[in-house]
Amino acid sequence: MFSGSLVTYIIFAVMGILMIFLILQVVLLRSKVSALTRKYQYFMAGEEGASLERHLSVEVKELREMTRSSEDMLHQHELLSNMQVQSFQRSGLVKYDAFDDSGDKLSFSLTLLDGANNGFVLSSLVGRETSRIYVKPILNGQCREAISSEEAESIGMALASYEQPRHIAEENEKNAAEAAYREARKGA
View (cartoon, rainbow, N blue to C red):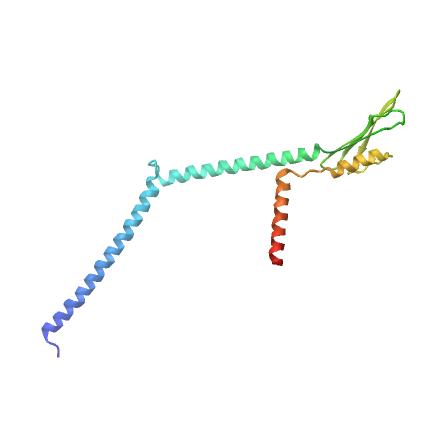
């Protein structure tokens, strides 16, 4: 069938192909090990010679400190928000002549309201020979006592005078502009 030299030749050819395949596998594995070694050395050596474990430990500590700081800021924000609701933030002032003989609109009604629309209306009635000051409480934007038209106007001004914080107003303007742009694109 086959001569001895042909069989030997085939065996050597197969062994040669296997050898080339194994050499290629060794080269491939060496390059992968080399890449892993470089990554390992990078992580374990670090820029300043610190180990990965120490580096991660520092990072975790910094993250915990930032979390604590963030929680403290949120707590401070809640406190400030509560204080803001309780502070006077709305006002209304109406000047008028309470008496026909006084002139120069020396009388006034001043309303001061907090974030929950609680506060007071202070009215000063000034005449040539007399002056009176009244304070009436306001709860939830309503005064339970009888009020003059000027006091009602002052309360209305205070209720309408709410100014949004600048960043909220700017965001609302931006959203309105974006909505207008989208509407314009739909129509086009």
